Image 1 (tube, rainbow, N blue to C red):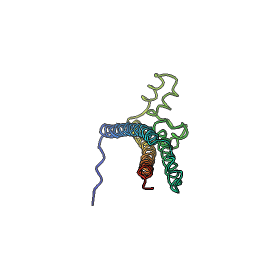
Image 2 (image 1 turned 90 degrees about the vertical axis):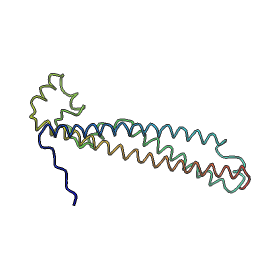
Image 3 (image 1 turned 180 degrees about the horizontal axis):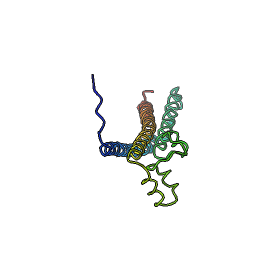
Image 4 (image 1 turned 30 degrees about the vertical axis):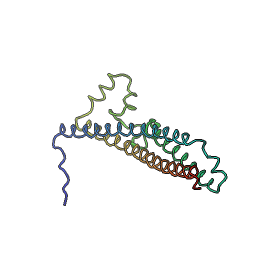
Length: 191
């Protein structure tokens, strides 16, 4: 049976552990943003590839019964590109305030010295400094732990969106390949 790792003993070790979790979460956040940017660029390339096949539907295809398959593949392709782009933008665009509060499970009146939305509500840096000094070491550790949890919740939401974008890009690639094969068969004269 697998044993759970022992938690760090002192508050300094606990602080270091939670800070390492936050740093790892921020690195994952950067990676997800890069993936979303790549998906947006891939969508632009895929749209260019469709245009590179010539007119959207070759005239020889319109005279055969295969036109509906071509139109269906193009519709699936365009819908998948739109879905992937929408999901990638959801990762890149900041969440609305209410959405962020819901995902992070933060209440509007909760005191938090790590969350930027709460930090900006202090009158000045002196007030913020006084708020931090008024907390005990255990309370600061609790605040830091809550911040690690909240960032992890945001990351999971972004991962959900990026996985949706990834699936939509794959569907669009398969639809494009199917359409290209159909156009190729028409050009060769097999259909």
